[in-house]
Image (cartoon, rainbow, N blue to C red):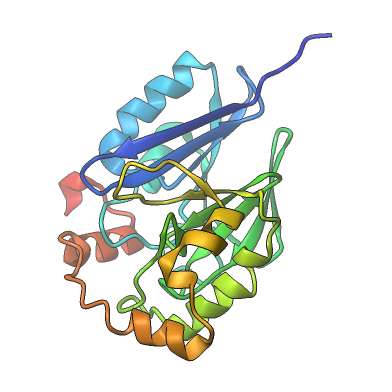
Length: 235
């Protein structure tokens, strides 16, 4: 009996510190990409070809403010289905998924978790032993909540009543990391994430409301471009 090895690729964009994920149940099968960056479209296509994968689905965890998504460009190139959560303002999404819905792909299943707070369209995706948390739960951090209808109260609920209730050995794969870390676990984040060492929702909101961060450099361009599904030469 032939054993088919699951394919899991974690790719990094240095400019925006974005992680992109390519998933497939094996070489020669269907593939899914999470949080692609448009400048790396060619790289994704070449990797898919090398692994003999057929891209059928592409997911954005939320409307990104720091890069242009590759979601629309990949769909043009491969005819894959563009997926986001039902609260996304994207005008180019093919399939809008709801809380607890399942996204199936040739032997792989992702469960949809609505985890607002960073934005009002932030979703996480649970796959057996791992969870793709977008910008909701980062490694030793959490996504800022001061723009795109962000809400610290909602994020607290998404964290403490959803993500942190997953088994502690669940591997956390975020959409960003700024310190070279590739993954964590729910247990590690509960114990070590400084943003999570709070005793109440009020404490958490106080922290998030006083971060005083500069806006992402590409925010004014990226958000409207990602809503409209524009490519680099259309901006």
